[in-house]
Image 1 (cartoon, rainbow, N blue to C red):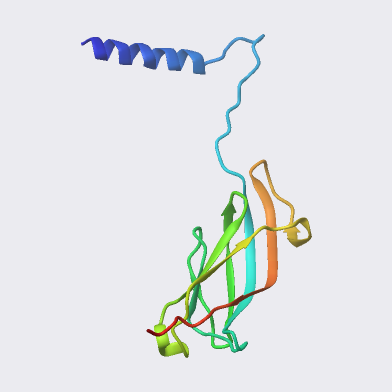
Image 2 (image 1 turned 60 degrees about the vertical axis):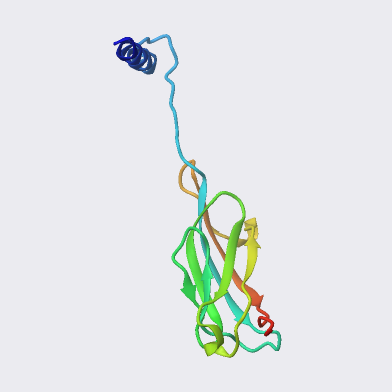
Length: 143
């Protein structure tokens, strides 16, 4: 019973502090969210000899992964929440694409020169695009 009374008192206290009907009191506006930007990244994945690698999964934690084409190219689009964007590259078919390649990753930080559109509102920081994001993967060592 004591716990129910404490819970009710806490609920009333929270409700009472949330209501601000006094005209001489400033209105309190609370905003929740995380700043974000939209991005588009285009690039190519190659081996050490400069040959394109197909069927490499290109991924970032906030988007659906894409797979490189026969020419090693990819295009990744999504929303980035926070600062740097980490992109990972994973060989998903093993030796079928010419070798068993080790995974790799790149950190991307967009610059003002890469902005393609201004943001709309307090949280949307704009649109960014980067092309020519190259990744070279090495073959895994055979034991």
